[in-house]
Length: 198
Image 1 (cartoon, rainbow, N blue to C red):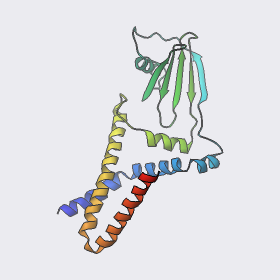
Image 2: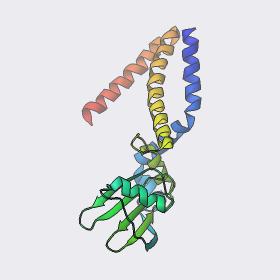
Image 3: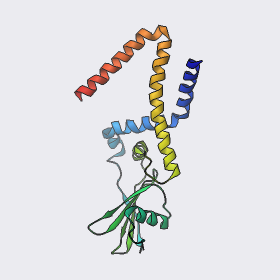
Image 4: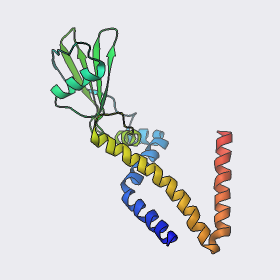
């Protein structure tokens, strides 16, 4: 009964997390072969390009920090979502990075000039895959972002479960024990070599 439950969980968890597995596989391949993809795309990853510049005169609550200012700016521009914000000491500019996986933007508000500059990263598949690979954490005030972070935790737990349940299933099949032990020993030895040598 336990073995059947283990196998079914192994199977259905893999099916549920297939999109994440494919995304992490594709993004890791892109990051592992940056030189190849740079030649295929004809250059490095895209950089921010000017989307628009406009007059902007913000009035922030007294004592507002960078996060509160950033939230107010994004709300007024209808660009709400996950972001981080900082204040630049030399000129008091508020810099907001809107962490949209499809169209990331940097919004810079210059209080002295009373203007705002919005820059956007052009779409590119390799850059999108890298952003999705690195997207994680519960630091954003958004239920959707927290749900994504939870699925990343689920993926991590699933990988550990697959490894351990795989060992269990291997041990149950007596005919595979010898070759399985050899495969496990070879993997451990190679991994150990990399840990020591790299």
